[in-house]
Image (tube, rainbow, N blue to C red; front, top):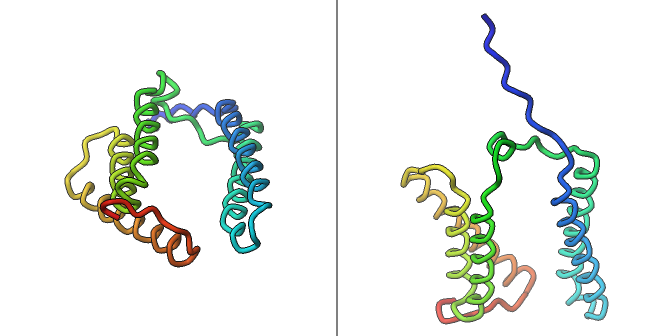
Length: 162
């Protein structure tokens, strides 16, 4: 006998994502408009990020309205999504922003990266995987520091621990 086919994943409109993308599109517009008063050199970074945010937001809106989102995983199709994880993620971002000027970019960003990875994990993971994630976090934070400090010449917050 043939194995039973898995049930087709649920597809549909993700109106929450559309609403959130619309909010981010408005934020992108405000950021771009706010950068128009800056010097030509000073406005490059905010305008670039604003345009990228606008393009990605529009893409998400189009996909959401057309119902072309990724299939919903079966665990969320059956039951409610964990709002506790979402609240913890918001708390991590808030603490990161609050401590960034006090402690510094490198330490707070690394800690936030690892904390978000822990919150996003649903299953037990071997120590080797956490070691690999730690190395990825170190490289990611270092690359972002280099890009922002040396390539884009942004002043990075230097707290007690850099």
